[in-house]
Image 1: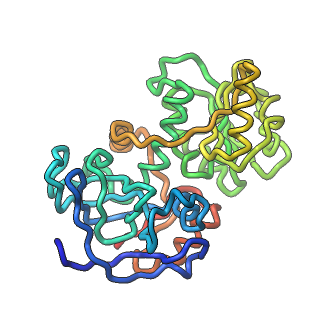
Image 2 (image 1 turned 30 degrees about the horizontal axis):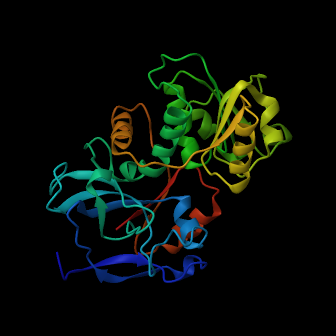
Length: 329
């Protein structure tokens, strides 16, 4: 499709807001040897899109400006690089385009073939686009980091998921229940019923004193905490941890990294561990199959047209949603 144009959303500066997003025509990208070109049917916004646009991850991301944002897409493969073997033109897929180059908020996007997986017909494009980043982080934190067995064969486990309104928290509740864990979740008061509907055993209003203190209504001590909220002091977590309790921070800050280092140096059994996302296609494929089988559901907050991205971007920046924001061409 060399030389053809497409519509895309693009910003030219870091530190601006929704007003810097422009819907315009740009060249259709050409896939490299190890890449696929996808006709986008749905793209999903994530908090990281806003963080990158604000310049909070410079000089790492964005790699260059102007930037087409968006990393989570679903659509149909229309072209593949010469070295691609796992997918072909006509396949329905979901993919991660990567933080460095983005590219998801467009009619066509390129992604590495090794971060592209088949999307079965039972999974809609909007559902598929909702899976990659948040689903992978929840899966990694619970399994690779915390060691939870999602087939339910592990030891009985008490898990706290903070700020379960967050899209990682949505997935974490459901995956933890597959592991036969007892799940306590904190969230905004308007999202309590939604958190319960995903399977949480106990849901606490995070605006109340008990919610802010992270207390379990049943007095349970937590073996695992999946921390999806804002930076929280060690002294808030520590009284509610089991003797070997671990906190896995999916939004690590400098303070959480400092706490982790100090606890490691003192050989503490209780730890706060930063989790850095490692994209793995096999885990994404596993999550897609769970959605297909109805064992996990994606939660969609709202849908917008790609041609009018400002409202979607502003809503994503507020970080008060429950579920995913989808943009469709």
